[in-house]
Length: 217
Image 1: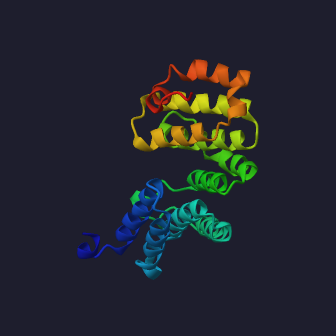
Image 2: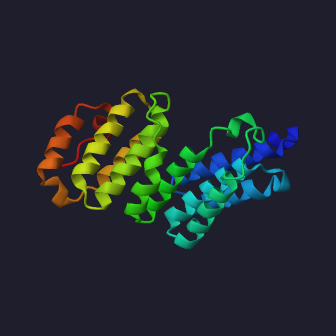
């Protein structure tokens, strides 16, 4: 439809959204290909913000594939491009993508690459905390919780996860459920024997997303 309308920029944005969804469903190579197609389709008409967002989607896919070098290159280019943005250069539908959104992408990528310290450092700036962006805040906060769990800081990870689960009380999304499920997958048997985990589950069991995923044995 965007091709028929002659809107190559919007077509690129649609491909980028498809890349994001492909990563979510586990089709990482296709996700990387879609993100690259988003970049090459509109060619020289891309704005810096759009280039940054498309590169970030490529980075997300490459991180899931374990391609650390490719991911780092894509993130570096995304950051460089975003620094070139101007207030009036973007279509309205991409204006949401800013430094806060890019910080969230860094957090996701570093978590997936096993760089938990970097994930907490770069991802910390990705949480709005204004009550107007609960969905974005939920995702970013869950990534932070996972990163702390991976660092061995289980107590802090559980505390942050509770904050995310409270944010998720008003959200209905398969993606939200998947984030909780992935968080559960990072909790080791040793962590489950700790008092921090018992305290966490005592509170978490009353929250909708934790109930929906199902408590771990």
